[in-house]
Amino acid sequence: MDKSEWVDSLEIDAAMYVFRERTSLKRWRPHRVAFMTVVFSNMIKKEYGHLEAQGRKSYMLHNLLLQFGKGVLPPHGRTHEIWNIDVDRLYVHVHVSGNGNHWIALCISFVTRSIEVFDCSGKKRYKEVDGFANLIPRIVKAVQPMRHQKDFAVGAYTVSYVPVGNLNKSACDCGVYAVKFIECHALGLELSLLHDGNIIEARHRILWDLWEAANDPELIDRMSKYQSPECLSSTVEEIL
Image (cartoon, rainbow, N blue to C red):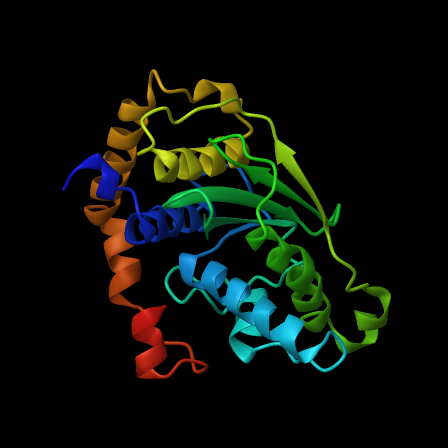
């Protein structure tokens, strides 16, 4: 497998699982943060199409989106932490069109009602981000206690594109950049630490982290005790 095929959705989800477990086990300092899957990202894009087709007043949130907001999903490494109550921000990767096979990363803050976009190509507009800006506030409101829901607006979050320079000259490293942008931002590190001169080493580091996690006794024990959430059928669980 060459670098044009790796990192993709499976490796991205594996990396985000490791990030979730590091946070849950207090191996990482960041707290009140959630790391989402590519399935969640794809659901947002699909459901936003339904919202636009049905109209904002008629559209009803998909139940699985609510389960993400309650921390029941993602199922592996699930936290049961509710957005805005236990979590202040979430990170997610988005596969975008119009730029070939390309990945970007988002940091979505419930506190500031804003989305930061990290894109190694330096582009300034992706229509796929609109789904997150419009659906995330609806999910946040829906998972709050009933008595507090009236205090939450469903207006779209603001979107800003974080300047990172024109990177990824190889046109093969966008997935690596997206994973590492999230890791750096979550840990409070400068994004300028990542550049084309060390992106191969960053790719190797992701591979090492995944190998290390696969051989981590504590993670192996946690995975051995996995139980499927009640909201998932066996068919859906295979996808998630």
